[in-house]
Image (cartoon, rainbow, N blue to C red; front, side, top):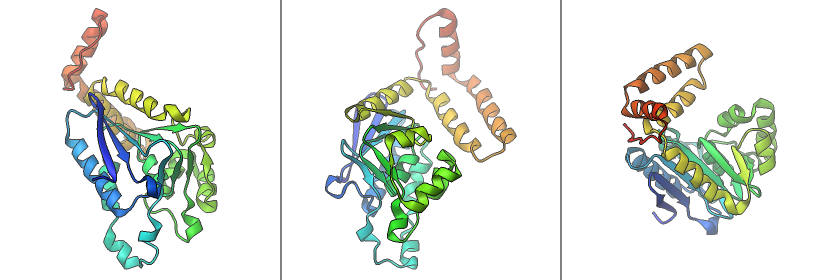
Length: 256
């Protein structure tokens, strides 16, 4: 799986790195299958509590591999069932941080939007340029982007194909924070380290509640939150966390 690399930079943290610099990390079918395999395995690995996804210092991912689809017909695209390779990322139960340097275009922007936190370098560029090659986003761009930035901003991005600077993306809420380019990966790993040190079940339930409640009514979302909140009182980490607070000491969370 040389087009994607799996690293273990520190305890509790995994880093998945796109590794096709010669193709600007274009998301070929092989790359998407490799990402699916990594995220399927990481979801089941109890030693991993947070994952960072990056493309390297100069480009995150410059979209899908146009050469691999230029002559395809609709039935062939349907048979490829590209949505299957995105499913393990969409359903990944642990926090995912995207560390974005350089271009995050088309499928690359959609990949970043699968993350829970996006750390962008000052030189990062985001966009959905599919309109310029006669198609439209096909991995969630028309759905996740409006939810992130609102209909009117999203429509401009989708209908013009114009890229956004990191500062523009930050202003409209598409990224979590912007840092100097040289500090992107380190900052993402620092956030991952902080999250990995938290009680793992509470972390998972927070992500679950946020995602499950996003498309529900407020009352339905509050019910999801309330049930998850109550369930955490049956965990060892809840007992340890509250005892440590009362005793004025650092908690020793065990993830159970």
